Every structure is written in structure tokens, then in C-alpha cells.
Amino acid sequence: GKYNLSNLTAIVDRNNIQIDGYTEDVMPLEPLADKYKAFNWNVLEINGHSFNEIIDAVEHARAVYENPTVIIAHTIPGRGVSFMENLPEWHGKPPNKEEARKALHELRTLGGKIRGEHE
Image (cartoon, rainbow, N blue to C red; front, side, top):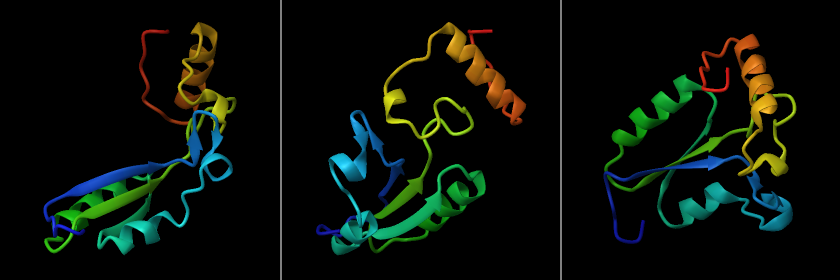
């Protein structure tokens, strides 16, 4: 913003979790969009799980030449896996073989096309 950068797009995965808990409990960030706007960024907030919204946001960002753009993609960590979804303890923790098998099964049941070495 300050240096009038153009042709710059940042994507923030706003999942509200960090290694030691929920961000708003540990290090509050909100209102995140307002902070970027204060530095003259063009701000787009999207559902980070929606391919259509991601594509639309990137196309919109490419059309902005006056300021840098930040796409704040709101996501849920572990979405679709019952025992991982939105839980800080899974931030940076790999699943063991059985947990990976169960997670892949749940994702495939939801229609995912996940393939892995843990089958």
C-alpha cells in the first residue's frame, strides 16, 4: 500500500488456529481486513473451501492495478475429518497410520478424490 505496489496479490489462509490455540485467544488478529485496508490494500474475503470463490477472487485481483490485493480465505482446518476439524491440537501434527486411514475414508465418503500412500 505505502509504496503503491501493483500487480501483487497475497492470499491469507484465515483458519483462526495457530500452534498453541485459537488465534483470538492467543494473539487476536481481528479486524484483519481493516488492518490491510488501512495500508491501502484491496481486500477480498472469501470462503477458502470454494474453488469458484478462489477463482473469482484471483481474477478480480488480476484486474486491480492501483493497489496490492489481499485475499483473506476463511477456512476450517481439517474440514471434512470428524476428529481433526477445527482443533488446534492437529496444527502441525501428522496423523499416524490408522488416523490417516480413517481421515482418507471420511474424505472419500464425502466425495473427495484423495489418494495417498497410506492405503
